[in-house]
Image (cartoon, rainbow, N blue to C red; front, side):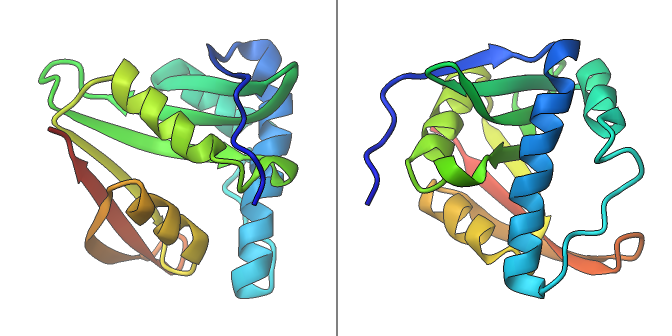
Length: 163
């Protein structure tokens, strides 16, 4: 098993980070889709061009995950600032060579410490088995599932109640 990274930083993403983060995100998501469905993920409009992530820069909080000097992943959160009780993890992704090194778990710890909330929620596709394992290992529980007509697939909703 690989050693957990000790030289990990979390930095707010900027416009200059959009394309490097987009490349990491596409590789990570396509790998999961290929692994579990046998096809690369059909992407929403603008996903591979950076437009999708650029849109999140304007309406959420986007961070890059840096190991040594390499951008190895990122995450998007949407805080519920008025109530300060519920936050949404829109996406978390780690590049393929850096997976299974505890980077995702350390990232979740950083997110939960830095953006306190009573409840964290996220969604993932029913076919994304590694995501299910990852969230459950980090204290999230599947609370709901629904069929997303737009993407023609079942989606699971995970939550974590904070102490």
